[in-house]
Structures are given as structure tokens and as C-alpha cells.
Length: 148
Image (cartoon, rainbow, N blue to C red; front, side, top):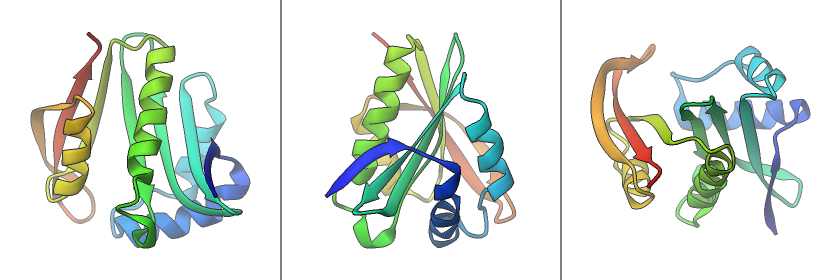
């Protein structure tokens, strides 16, 4: 059974393996995740745990005036099962709980599947960031969801 739970430092080896699987060469570092997890007032990170194995993860950065979906990843073996939507919905619920009027995110311009998920959750494209993802130089699509 898969359940969502808060990300812990002990999850970082599994999260880093997923980073490499999903986002190489544009991966975050373990130090970046440690920094994120230490900022409990403005950060909300989750993992999708399936019988003790991390099969996905997601993070939200929330300030008073806006929130940012920092990352979402689901292992390739489990993509298409709705785990990405489950993680995104949990982040959006947290943004709503924190009364964030706007949620922003960047997504790879070549990731049509993720863009479709975000559009289905009320996000619209508001711009592009050329060569945003480094070192690959892939463009990012900037998307926004406003609370009605």
C-alpha cells in the first residue's frame, strides 16, 4: 500500500536515487534537500512510501503571499498510476491550508505529461525561462494557479 508521509533525512538516499533516475543531469543535491528540510516554517516535503520504499516525493515552499511547487518526482516504474497527482494534490492542500493566494511552479518545457497534470489542477502558463535547467540548458515553462 502506498501512503504519503513527511520526508525525513533518512529518506535522502532514496530521494537522491530518484533524482538521478528522473532529472539527471539537472538533479538537486543532498545538501539542497537537507537545507530544505531544515526550513520547517516555509517548507513542506512529502514522500510516497510503498511498503517502506520511497516511490515518489514532492516539496512546497510557502510564503505569506505565494507558494511554489519546488519538486515532484515519481519513479518511472510507478508513473501513470496517479501518484504524481496524489502528491500534487497534497501540496495544493497544504498551500490552501496556509492560505497561499497563488501557487507557482516551473516545469521542463519538454515534459508534456507534467504540464497536462498541472493544467488539470488549474495551472496556466504565464511565461518561459530559457535554459533554466542546468547543466542541460532545458527551458522551463512557468505556471501559476490562483485561488478563486
